[in-house]
Length: 116
Image 1 (cartoon, helix red, strand yellow):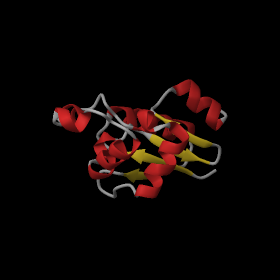
Image 2: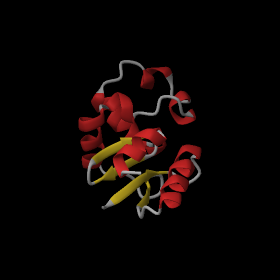
Image 3: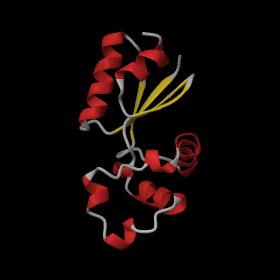
């Protein structure tokens, strides 16, 4: 099974996800999207499957520090532009695996996805 975990290394949720994968002996590739970025095509694909509202991290400080005009009247195009410009606005982790996508870390969902 091919697994790619997208996130940033100092995020607590990403740390929990990586710890869980390691404890299960599940191999994965880590993609630091703060350093390596995310392509527009990848963002578009995630938004198509998960919905841009789920992919955009409104709870993070990066989003909260935006000027009000940047946060108002959000739509997919505006949200994707914000996330492409500042990848820390992407919810994390996002995991691509042979069976689909996971967003965030909810252990029961991960156990179901990875047969653990």
